[in-house]
Amino acid sequence: MPPSTDLLQGTLDLLILQTLAPGRMHGWGVAQRIQQISKDVLQIGQGSLYPALHRLEYKGWIRSGWGTSENNRRAKFYSLTPTGRKQLETELESWERLSSAIALVLGRIPEASA
Image (cartoon, one colour):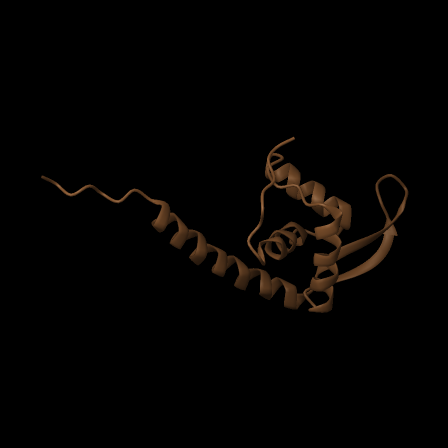
């Protein structure tokens, strides 16, 4: 089992919004897709996933509805709202700024010439 990866606060929301951008998906499918795309580095447990989905729905960024999953089970499917699409763009811009700043801090500082 790979080591635990703690996500920065708000990062899970961004990952969920990005995963739902192409279209509707049931909750467990969101977690599986994030794990698949991250090559098993990011594993979202149900204890984190479903509270995040409910929080995003409460904020109006996603909507849900019941449907039938690929294995013929009743499942709740989630999709982005227009507000959620705008929020995704905002979150992506913030992530770019943050990741660039972190990269600067972690980058090698050129040594002073003698």
